[in-house]
Amino acid sequence: MIVWGSRIQETDRGAGSFFCPVCRDDRHYVHQQVSRYFTLNFVSLFQTDRLAEYVRCAACCSEFRPVVLTRSPEQILLHMPLWNCCACGCRNIGDESACVACGERPVLA
Image (tube, rainbow, N blue to C red; front, side):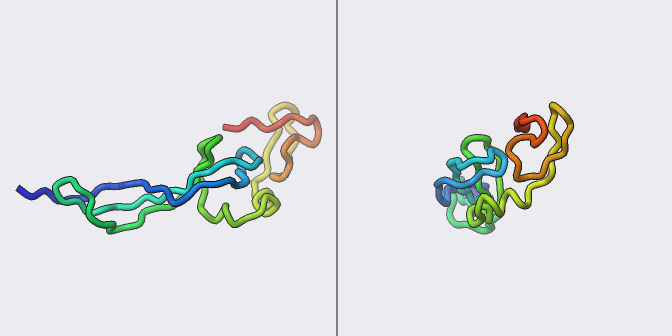
């Protein structure tokens, strides 16, 4: 009996250090690729599709597109959304690591 099918696998593409937009600091990352493989008798033989590619922060486990590795911290922070301070309600721009009014740091999910 011959059994054929497909399997999804994640493979490491690399690791290193990058500026995490969520942690707002330099953190270690793992660069992952998700692919579909053709299987024969439950053995992966060859890749049929590349489904996704992402960078995962080792500290907060947030996932980003690989382009984040090519951007400077200033470029990343410039494109971050506005955030509201939980302590005083002040609206802050994305590149502020603490509230400009009260100094409270944002709560990270």
